[in-house]
Amino acid sequence: MRRRLIPLALPLALAGLVLAGCAVTAQPTGTTTQAAESSVVETVSSVDASIPTAAAELLEANADGTVVKDDEWSAADAETITLAGSTASSDSTGVTVEGSTVTITAAGVYRLSGDLDGQVVVSAPDDAQVVLVLDGATIVNTSGTAIQVVTADDVAINLAAGSTNTVTAASSADADASAAIYADTDLTISGSGSLTVTDTGNDGISATDDLAIIGGTISVDAADDALRGKDSLVVKDGTLTLTAGGDALKSDQTDDATKGYVWIAGGTIDATATDDGIDAQTDAIVTGGTVSLSTEDDGIHSEVALAITGGEVTIGQSYEGLESADIRIAGGTTRVTSSDDGVNASGNTASTGGGMQDSGETVTISGGTLVVDADGDGLDSNGTMAMSGGDVTVYGPTAQNNGALDSNGGIDVSGGTLVAIGSSGMAESPDKSSAQGWLAATVSGSAGSTVQVQDATGTVIASYTAAKTFGSVVFTSSAITDGQSYTVTVDGTATSVTAGVAATGGMGMGGGGGRR
Image (cartoon, rainbow, N blue to C red; front, side, top):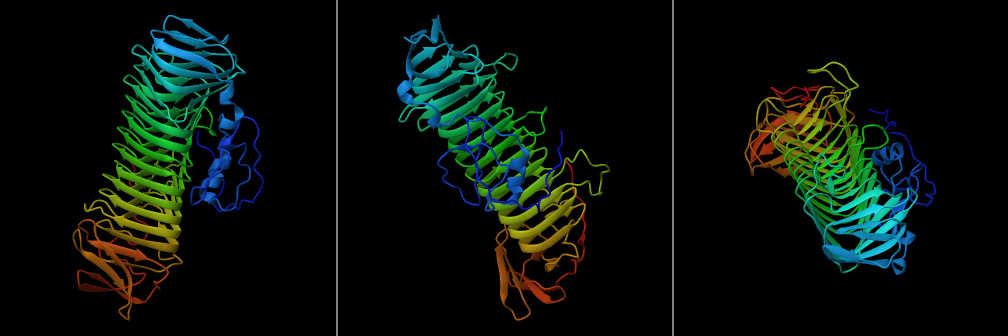
C-alpha cells in the first residue's frame, strides 16, 4: 500500500491549471486561504510555486478527485418533487413514486421540498449527472438510509439559499447502504443553505468514490463516521459541525495507493469524534480553512504522510495529536493538546528493526506555528526530526519516562525557533552537527513560571510562560551560537549554560522514539 513519495526538496514550476469536465482535484491553497472562482481544477501536475512543496508533492502523487461544480447545471432546469408525508408527487418523467419511496431514474436537476417519511433513491444510467436541490426538505427513514444513490455517474446535493433541510436515518453496517446519505458514486455537496444529518446506526454521509464538500452549513451526528469518502474526501468550503461515534472525516481506500486521502483546503470544521478527527488511509493534507478537533484517539491520523501548510488547526483533546509515518509542518497555525504524544512519526511498515533503532519515519518542520501541550512525548519520531523554519513551542510532558523531544535517529536543526519545556528524565537535544545553535538546561519550574533565555550581555532573547511543571528547557534559534554562554532564568533564578552542550542528565543527541 505504501507508495514511494517524491523527495521533499523537489522544486515545482508554475504552470497553468486546466478546468475540464468533472474529473478534478480541488485547487490547493497556500499559507493563506485563497478565494478561487472555481472550486476545483482538473490536474495538479504542476503547482504554483507559492504552495509549499510539503503539500504540493502529496497532491501531485494522489489521483484527481471528482466534483460537480455549481456552474455545470442550472437551477432553472430543476423539476419539482413535492414530498408529502408517506408519499410524494412529481410531473417529471424521470421520477417514480411507489409508496414512500421516491426514485429518480434519469439525469437532470430535481428540486425537493416538503416532508417525507421514506426514502429518496437515485437509480439513473451510469453516465448520468444528477443534482438534488434540497429546498426545505425533511427526509426521515427509521429503517435504513434516507438518500441512497444506487447508480449514476456523478451526483450533487445542493442546499438552496436560505433553506433548512434535515435527513435522518437508522442505517446498518450490514446493509448495502450504510449511511443516512449514501452514494455508490462520486458525491458533491454545495450551496449556501443548511443541512442537518443524523444516523443512529452507522455513517452520516458516505460515498464509495469521491466525496467533496464545497459549500453549505452542514451538521452531522453519526453513530460511526460523520463524513466518509472511500476514494477521497475533500473539503473546500462550508461550515461543518461533526459528531462521530467513529471518525469525523475519513477516507479508507486500500486498493489504490493514489487514493484514500483527506484534503482540507478551506471551510470551517468543528468536529468531535470517539475515534480519529481525520483518518486517511494514505495522506492527510491541510492547506487552508479552520479546523477544530476534539477526539478520544488521534486528532489527525494518516498511514503515509500528513502535511499542514496553511489554515488553522486546533486539536483541543486527543490521545495523540498528529500521527503518521511522514509528518510535515510548513505553514499555518497548529495547536495540539494530547494525553499521549503530541506529534508522533510512527508506523513505517516498510522499515525493519524496532526499539531504539531509526525505522525511517520523519518529522519535518519548515514553517508555520506549532504549539504542543502533551502528557506523553511532545515531538516523537521513530526515525528522524529536521527543522529548517517555523516557530515551535512544546509544553510537557511531566513524567520522567517521556520527553518533550524524542527521536530514534536524531534531531537536525538549521533554522526556525523551537523551545521544549518538559521533564528532565528523557530530555533530548538537537544533534551536535546541527547548523543552528541550541542550548539545553536542567532547570525546574511549575505552571505559570516565567522562562527566559538571555545572552552574555543580559539581553533577553526569548521569554515563555510554562504551562505545567517542568525539569528541563531546550531552545534553538538563529540568535544562539555554539560555544557561547547563555543564561536560562526561571522566575528570577539563573542557570548558566554553554550552547551545544547537552544538559546534565539529558539524552544529548539521538534519543529514543516511542511507538504506540
